Every structure is written in C-alpha cells, then in structure tokens.
Image (tube, rainbow, N blue to C red; front, side, top):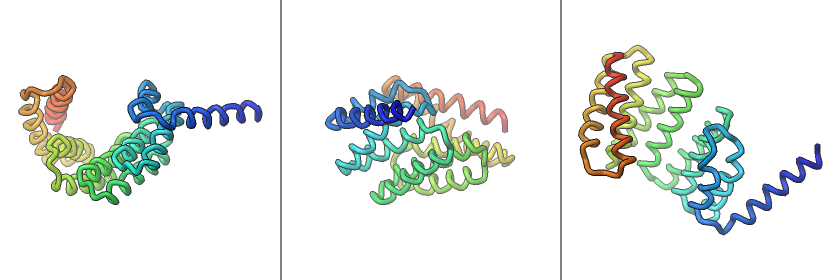
Length: 200
C-alpha cells in the first residue's frame, strides 16, 4: 500500500514537470472535463495555480483558485481558496475581481453551508465593490443573489425589488446581438429572476 502511494506521488510530480511549460488553455483542458467536487482534477488545478504564481499572473491565479473551489469536496477547503481569491484580488485592487470573489464566498455559505446571514453579508460586500465596476452583468448577478438570500431570510419585499431589477437587466441584455453563450446566460438570468419574483 505504501509502495502504491509512493508510485502515485511520483506520477503526480512527473505530470507536473511534463506540463510545466504548457499553456493555461492546455492545462485547463486537463481538468475541465471533471465534475464539480471531483478531486481528481486538483492535481491539474494545482499545476495551473503554480504556473500563475511563477508568472505572477494574478488573473490566472484567481481563476486557479476559483477552479480549486469548484473541484474540492470539503467546504472548509473551498472557503480557504475563497479567501485566497479575495486576498489576491484586493492586492491588485481589481474591483471586478474583488466583487466576484466576495460573491463566490457568499455562494459557498449559501449553497454549501445553508448559512444565509453570512451569505447576505458577503453579497453586500460584493455589491458595494461592484458599484466601482462597469461590468453590468456582474452587478446584476450580485443583485440576483441578494434577492435569493433575502427571500430565504423572509424579506420578500426587498427580494422582489432585486428580482425586478435583475429581470429588467437580463430581458434587455438577451435581445442584444451577443455570443450564443452570453445570450443563454441572459435568458437563464431572466427566467430565474421571474421565477424567484413569483415566489415573493
């Protein structure tokens, strides 16, 4: 058994050396096919993170941390990577990334821990940072999540106002001539906002 463990560790180290010179896209291709919480992807995610650290590419480093959140099973580890994402974004004063990072941590509290008050607090921090952003999609994604957590906390009037705002944004955006994936995201945002609004 110890011998098998040694072999696995050696294979992981060899894989890291082999893929050190690969592009971010090629490394991402190694983990993209895994499902959420499938920790087999983490050896490749770590390669991505290591490359970003070596190259001091903070945007890729944040993406690596976000992938680590996605593929880790344990909530505590997801939260550690969420904190790393926030810290990295703050160090580089990237308000879009700071807002996304706080939103991401809030999502862990909401979906994984079912702790709605801490999720709301994190969403509000994300919302405040998004006020410095020009990314309207990000702003409205945060507004939608605010509405969701407020509806779970029983503040239906406040939740409804958020869903009305996000529905209006997504309805307008889905009519624009965008990439099919963006159009689909806007349609999903619109219909989800309407559905949530109907429950308030």
